[in-house]
Image (cartoon, rainbow, N blue to C red; front, side, top):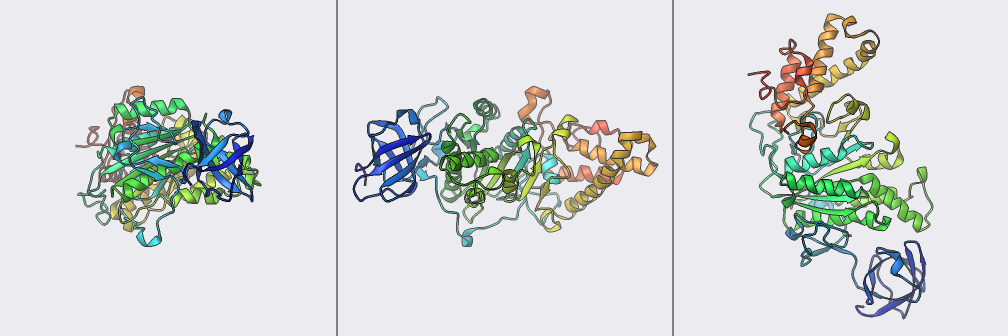
Length: 479
């Protein structure tokens, strides 16, 4: 069907073009149509009737006109894959966006692929250590799992995402557990290489530039591929950027047999782009004006981001919460696919606590004795009990002050405050803004320190001394 006329454009409505078919040969669903007169024109087939083909316009609609001839390419949209994309920034079509020359397109993969069959899915049941105390202790991450950073604008989702990329991609987190802490859950990333794929879906152009700069400065860029579909792009492109990045991650997992860190910023913008596309196509909306296909669209993406016998894809997904309303239908649907939901709270951030994790709304499916090991599980459960007690006491403290608590409650209140302060951490990504040098704290070190605080042996030290430090030993609090 290559070089064969498939039709003529008869109408253009926004980002939708109608093509009248010529002859009895029709293009396949998702096939790319093009114009030999202008290589920048790209149409993607989404449906057809007896004589009409309906296409989404993936290029500028300004260049189209009625009567224009279009041809079938015989293929769907493809994206460059393999090691050639590492260290590069590109758009949905594999065009360079980093001023470093064209990207090698020798290896390409379709952005549409089916989820792996169940018989090759292989869960590692291992902890993926991040070096961030609050995450490793409160919401430990399973290798090959799905992690969501959920919060409104300006609470630090992107900073947390890039810090994780820095810590894990550079391999600075411990490769194996030698302390006996959780010895039944070895934290081995394995002998495989670790690569990262970043999908910028509907975010600001400035944020993409800042991310690139951070990755360069932290020397992480060489192991990262970035695909950007910024908010000034049309909805059809923004929607497909996430699928294109997924195709790159799948290639690293299946062909390179590597472990992959998949970062998407932002999943809510992916949902939003799907909603805009559905509106353009004239589909009937569902709950809270979201598209009726919302669940299917998210599951089509999420079901591809899984570990197999070849390698694992651990996905980290920023989820913007509109108006800080976490019950929003789009946010709730994304959260239903997550193994670990890390909710970032504006009220916690206002207290100067970073990362501003909401200790009550965050959750992880990994919190079991078998997965975490005895020491970690015991310390976490003990801290959660203290937290519940302190939550009720905080109302009294807010009204009459800490001095009015009983001696026992005052000790428990301060002990909990010390752990909350201890879980703050200087980040590599914010060294210039805060003046604090970034640190990485192994999970077993954090557990030992928190166990020591829980034991009461550090009750004589002020809670303020525990803010923004690494381990207690490095801070000189213990020898």
